[in-house]
Length: 124
Image 1: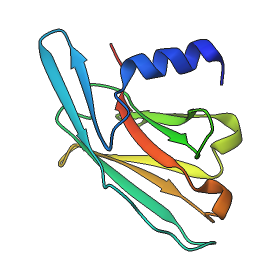
Image 2 (image 1 turned 180 degrees about the horizontal axis):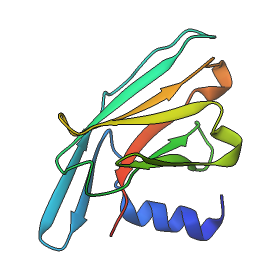
Image 3 (image 1 turned 60 degrees about the horizontal axis):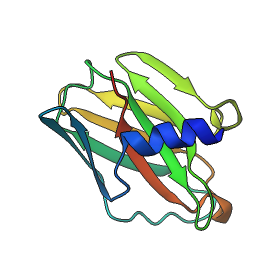
């Protein structure tokens, strides 16, 4: 991931377990669990409940392994999805408009996949 893209992502999110995005006078809240434990070989599921309509904005998932840089995983908007090429077979993102939830699913998780995973609303 390029340095400029990381800077853009950092401007879009506040690195916290509950990520808040500010747009002018409006504040969007994205809430995800503080921690999730997965055994090697198992699936990962992390849900991010948001205060906006998932049919109105792109929502990204980003991961940060300990001591390493942020890495963009992918994004979802309505039925559209975009993924980082090297991660598209590892992760999938689903949305539920009835609960305004964006879920990250990972398969065959391994110790090297240990990271802090963030959800973030993409700016307009």
